Image 1 (spheres, rainbow, N blue to C red):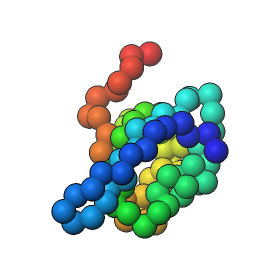
Image 2 (cartoon, one colour):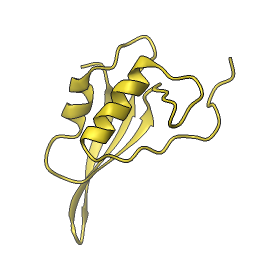
Image 3 (cartoon, rainbow, N blue to C red):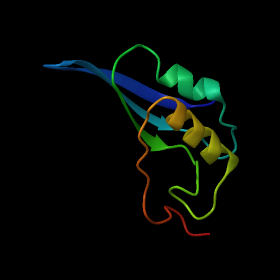
Image 4 (cartoon, one colour):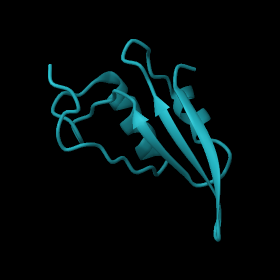
Length: 90
């Protein structure tokens, strides 16, 4: 796996929630295993971080890893919230 991160479990009245802070360096490829391993465990999950994944749904310059992330989200009922503007200026 190439995804780096830290996870904690928070106990809410409704049950545990897994919270992930993640980073996927631009030099490393995104693979489905990165996402499926992160979302395993059967708990509700909140993932926040920088995956360097761009898709037309949230960026004017799509990338392969953006397509992987979008496909995974669509197939697994995930919601994606990205910034409205670029986080870096090239």
